[in-house]
Image (cartoon, rainbow, N blue to C red; front, side):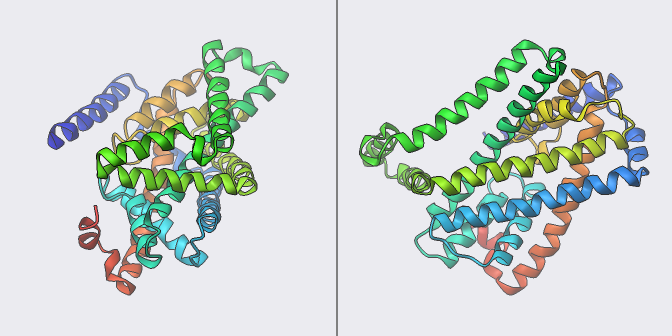
Amino acid sequence: MKNLRLFIKIAIVVGLLVLISKNGFLSLDATFTAFSRWNYILPGFLLAFIAQVMGVYRWHRLLKAQDIHLPFFTIFRLVFIGLFFNIALPGAISGDIVKAHYVGKVVPGKRAKGFSSIFFDRVIGVAALIYVSAVALMISGIQGWSQSIPPVLQKFVFGLAFLETAGFSYLYLFGESRDPVLKSFRFLEKKQKKFGSITRIYEGLREYRNHGITVFWMTAYSMVIHATVLSSFVCFCYALGEIQLAPLGLFVLMPLAMIVTAIPVAPGGLGTGHAAFLFLLRIMGSDRGADLFNLILSFQIFMGLLGAFVYLRFKAEDPSIGIDQLEKTV
């Protein structure tokens, strides 16, 4: 069954890339030409790198809210090691497994809370992406630019923003004794002990209801992170020669493409990312969406290589972080 799922994923990725290439929407020449335009590529890479470092601080704050205190530099190294594992070894041993394994090792009894912090970090990240898109859409509506975006897509963006807000509201409106989700998990745990770990992770998520100010500021902070990432995308588009693209339009549409890349089909969103960026950028009148994602993927590979260097140094100091040891914990 596992091999069948892998085969299906590979087939989807290959099929998408072949389809995009045959229709002339993927050009290695365009990608190589973009790399020669250093006045755009270097600022783009720098902005994307700054956003990664900013993300380290966000996880640092979320860990502290769970009463897990690790040195900032250690968290920095774990995040970069996670980037390496996400690119090199997709599957059971991902960057999140590495981070949670280490947190559980140095802070006994808090592995579930470590997972909760990682999961909540993802939740805030996705929520901030949607909010950035919604805010950009509102601004574009004031400027009259939003007319070029299909109404169904506009409703989709605002609908997602509403659902995200409702989700955060749920976290704060229901106390432990009235939370139907928590009651369901505890009921299932009594029937099957394997649900215990899920219950502990959800309980860890609920811890954040006691840190409303932290959640609010980290969500706002995440919007700044994503604005930085999207600014790097603007640089990449200009490197591709697509200088006619309005930055505000990219701020509306590219967050949706970024969410698609999170679907675990292939490392770094290979294939699905190309298709999503191509589809959404065509709304703005550009056929270079797949090439844009090539540049983004190049940055991810670069960060993964940096993460590999950090991993080798870290493993030399602590062998328990090695792949062979991690496999025993999965």
